[in-house]
Amino acid sequence: MLMGRRSMRTNSRTPARNQDEREAVEREFWSHSNDERPGVESVRVLAWKLAESRVFLEKLESFHERFAAAKVIVELGAGQGWASCIVADQFPDAVVLTTDIATDALRSNPWWQRVIGACPTGSSAMRSSETALRDASADLVFVFAAAHHFADHQATLSEIRRVLKPGGCAVYLHEPACKRWLYPLAYRRVNNKRVEVPEDLLLLDRVVEQAGLAGPLATVIPAPTTTFRGEIETIYYAILKRVSLLQRMLPCTVDIVFEKR
Image (cartoon, rainbow, N blue to C red; front, side):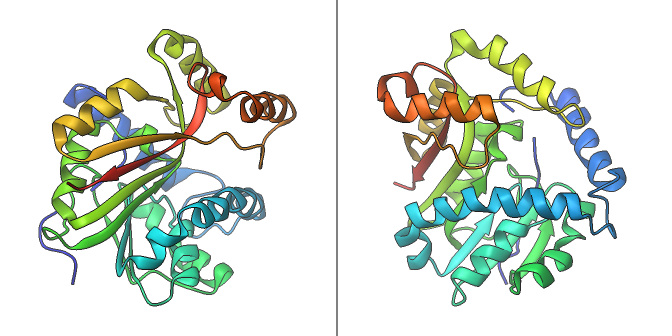
């Protein structure tokens, strides 16, 4: 129904060879992870994702009007697609399509359908920058805490603009981001936290610039939250919530809205 051309997780201007390597690592993770490979219904993953869903539900509340008005909703970089299941539950009248680079990630979606009690309309393995969606076929495209994996943001944003209907929008939700001068330090930190797959942060100035070149109008919304944080992170984000100036100076989670002009 929505298909017609060709998806995936990938970060900024990575050469094609490195992009392929990154994508291979991601696919390998979803295929062979002890807790997240197909067929494994891990209590550890269940607890982690349900805790993470508290943040996602906060985002759905913040952007409720946009989701409620959308008849066709697409998730990019969905992993196992649990967020799409929540969207299908919260907005049952919408067509919800979940996508990810890794077929083996999406093979676990039926488990989340049973856990959440709702299922997306369909799922497909595809690059974020190279989807199989028809032109002007989606009202809303969303990404939850995955856009920092995308290898080619400008191509992804061009693709988003292509698939959005006139007046449609895309939202990057709960994305780690920072200014260029702090990027090396922040990059080392996020990669020390999780070594299984490459991690990254969005460079805000670059994403806004890429959006301008690709077409959508970008609005960055600093969105610090203390929900589902470790002890030190809770203190850090509590300070950011109180001091708005620091939200635009220091590494901070953000939401970004892209409007199709």
